[in-house]
Image (cartoon, rainbow, N blue to C red; front, side, top):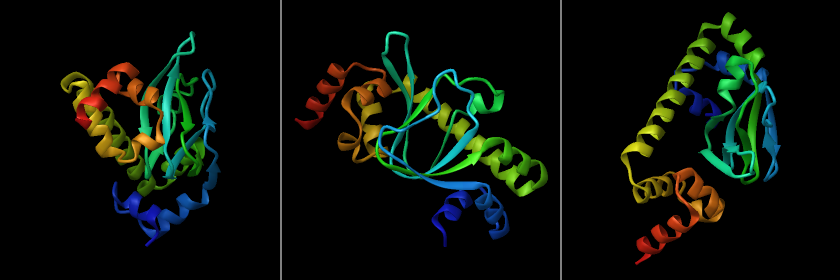
Length: 190
């Protein structure tokens, strides 16, 4: 069975017919390492399904400091949901940390399909529920776990993290400094 269909079926039982409709509005793309989807103050129009590689969502301050919001591994939906829904510029940038393979979908075309196909609409609702749950889990991690616990959880989620993501980006995601991250790593290796 197609791995993309298997992924979509993890949200809702998607028929071959519905999958075919979604395939028709999707474009397969390869993104080079460093490629950025969306720029600050740009109104996003696309949503992506990441099928290979690693991406991140980050905010850049006026001084140039980066704050990582999330890391994405296959299979994930990637995109500036708030900007897409509100049709307003996104504050986040989505960057390929490795070479990535994605399916790109025009959000308006997808929403039009939701209006005419209840199965696609139900899938969209389930994906939004999933995104909300992941967002809430992340918020709970930040308020209930110490930095070491957050780091260990991240390492479990992304086993090859040390070779894929620079230390300063990992530290930013954990809401700690790179020095604190070095201390955590040193402590764990003893």
